[in-house]
Length: 73
View 1: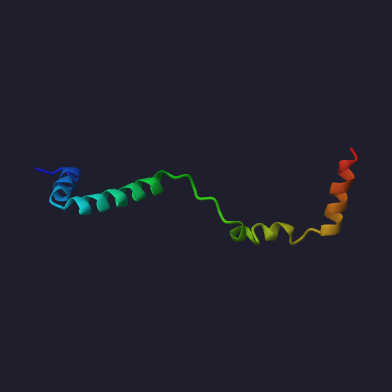
View 2: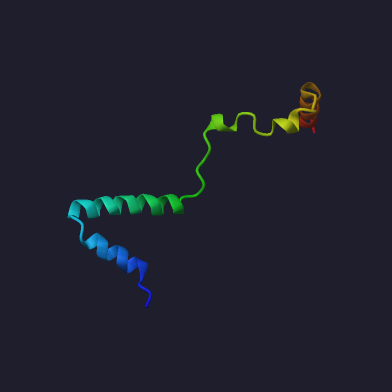
C-alpha cells in the first residue's frame, strides 16, 4: 500500500526541534513564494543590446527624420 508523501514529510518534521521546524517553514515559504511570484522584472542593464539585430539595417538619421516629420500631422 502506497504512503502519502506529504504525511511522511510531516511525520519527519514533527520529530525536529521547534527551531528546526521554523527553519523548514521559512524555507518552504521561500519555495512557495518563488513559484507563485510573477516573472522577475529584468534590471535595466540586462536589456542592453536587446533587439540590436532589428536596428542593424536601419539608417538612424533617416528613421529619426521620418519620425519627426510624422509629428507635424
